[in-house]
Length: 120
Image (tube, rainbow, N blue to C red; front, side, top):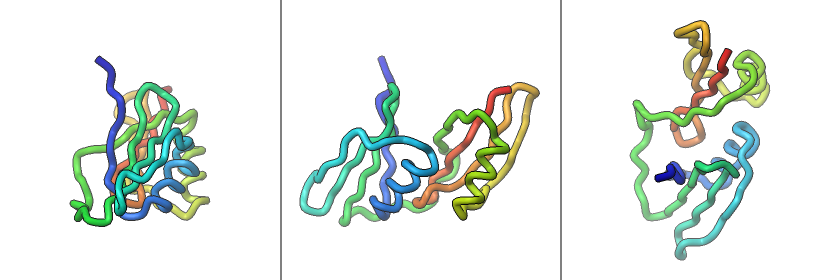
């Protein structure tokens, strides 16, 4: 069995696509209308993708605590600099719970936690 994708309901498809393309570095692999008031986009070329769903008729739950998407980076320090240059805030961290890993969190445009991880 393979893990295919993680679905995120979004308030603004354009704002969310901009974040996942420019900040995370994922590319759009598929984007389509799924009805008159619904749009879906898939991002990422790996085994697991991110699915963004905009539905005019869906009420979003707001901030989801306890769930995050983790993305590996070469340098946490460089990524923090990049995040700040883009006008975003570090939500928490950086943390280094062991000598082998360092990470921090930001929020995507929908309040979803994104973790950037460096293995040392």
